[in-house]
Amino acid sequence: MRKLALYNLFRGIKRLLPEMAKFQEKIKLIIKIVPIDEFIESLK
Image (cartoon, rainbow, N blue to C red; front, side, top):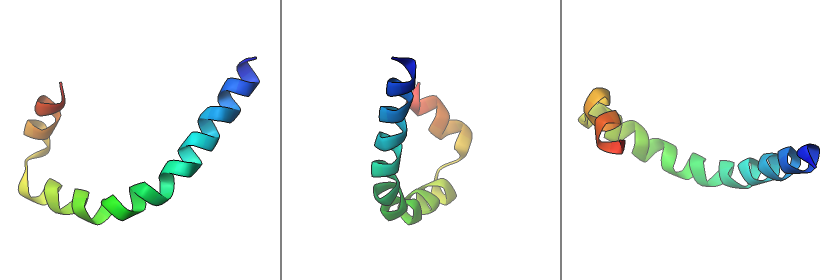
């Protein structure tokens, strides 16, 4: 059961990777503009 859950999680991550690549450049720009400490605080 645990193995299946890990497998599904891994598949989900693999599916998300291409999407993450698309946003990576935007994320880099955002990090340059917004201080990381403020960004982390805004996520809480």
